[in-house]
Length: 187
Image: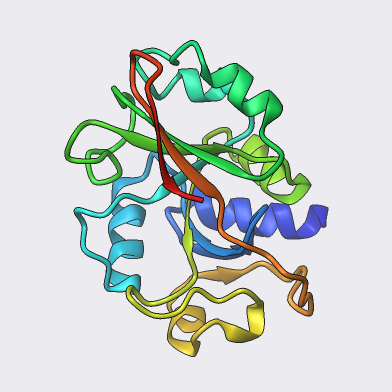
């Protein structure tokens, strides 16, 4: 796995786009601070730029660098939630404008996955994660389901877990307001 992390990070540092297994489904990713790489992902997926993508981080401390203030309820949510949980935070900062929602929000998931953690830590920045499909098409639950156009459109395909066929689901997504009001977006 270490060799795959090195290869993926080398591509990310050059502004490239990778296809990789996340803590949920296969994702398309790039350095979350690289505006051009983010634009490439929107283009590859044929995704409307007004739709947000998720950012993966390794800790709440890392999240704090990209939001004005972490709502008080978030640490408890992260500690007690038993599935991968993406939180939409108000007041995104220090990220390219094409990654931030029109309302100033950013969707971030603290990962619990050794591959993703190693990539993020080695890169030194969070990474983008969006499902490995063309916008509007079915979300691939296995590597074998990923459309050839997506595979050809990235700069590197991480060579792990490609044979897995376990049942996976996208993360739960909730929006947490500054006043701790919680809205479930996707369960």
